[in-house]
Length: 143
Length: 143
DNA sequence: CTAAATTCCTATCTTGTCAATAGGTAATTT
DNA sequence: AAATTACCTATTGACAAGATAGGAATTTAG
Image (cartoon, rainbow over all chains, first blue to last red; front, side):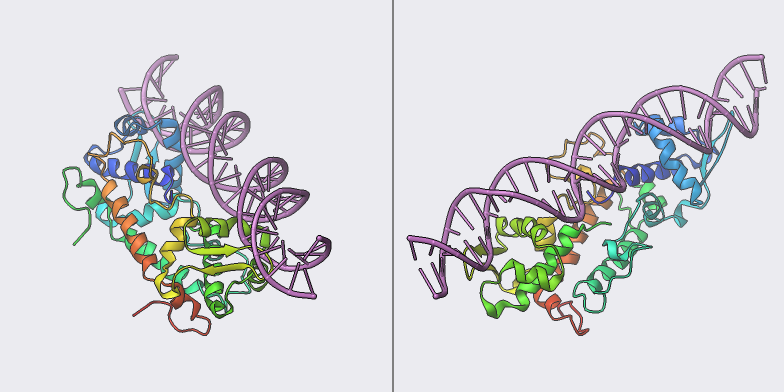
């Protein structure tokens, strides 16, 4: 598959946090239970979200995690691009990839570049707020 | 990256065959030399293209491979969907995946399904003919 | 009929990532 | 002081990517 469980779970965590935004800091244990995902595994995932400024955590009793921006201001792209290790169309377009000497004559490069843009644009259209409200069938897409 | 070298190389093979369509059956050796890719590796890749009815090969002297349909009638999607082992948004949507009991309440499922459609639609817009003509900068997208 | 060319088939190898588990340390509150 | 919680580091098993290698089967040319 294209999006790993890491990305999928990260999104579910973000949505869960959005759905319990009134509770302040939410312990990961609760998220893990509600989502039916191993807490230990989620730790590794949420670490990425913390490092990239999407959520913040505080330790100790009454600690937990909370979103750092409004759910309406966080897109699926923000989350996926941070959790998926190399979310680029092809290796040639990965950051740090060696310069390809065929680039000038490559018949497929423009398509891959377009695809990269499309990824950004597609997932940028879904916000955490929109996704969090999808439970009973409304569309998650913002109008 | 999202599309493996297998998919990328397959596309380049198809484009190369389209560019030498006048020559009848084209030996893989020539394709490999022109493209700068190991012939042995290409063998494994073109096998998939043969099995899926995109090209046909005949053995012996003067043998080689040729496209089975018009370049204008083959899309990038046709090629990629056959060479990439699991070109689906997420594991839940892979053929043969176990039924997910969260499907009914899954906040992200609709987005993944949309993404699957988008993949098909995006790569379906690029034909081998269009890509084969991109060498000197015209757009590969059909109007 | 033989030799060359070519596809086709099977097996192996290395490397890396995913997906997950485990055991602990540091900080905070009650 | 004890409980809670985030944070850190290491390890494991399974699997796919990305090749490489050697040979068997088929066809044509001479």
